Image 1 (cartoon, rainbow, N blue to C red):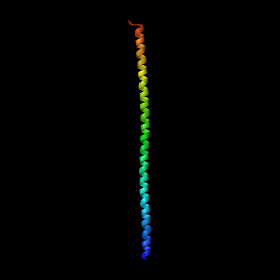
Image 2: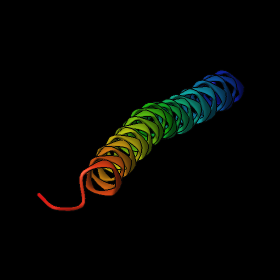
Image 3: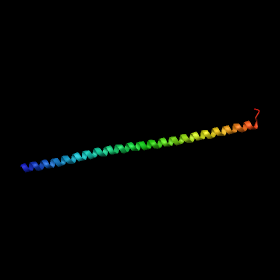
Image 4: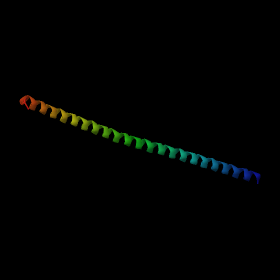
Length: 84
């Protein structure tokens, strides 16, 4: 009888150990998944910020080109008609 009790206790301890391992493993997987989601969000945000910056640079370059063209036209008009 004592032998049977010890055998059952051993089985219960082994089952408990496996359950603890499974719970720990699940927690680690959950944390890893959350970290991956966070990195993915950070990367997506960085891509959008880079695109916004690129578009702002292009816009500023276009404004500078237009301003230069307008200045050049004004200078040409002034040179052609200096008395106005």
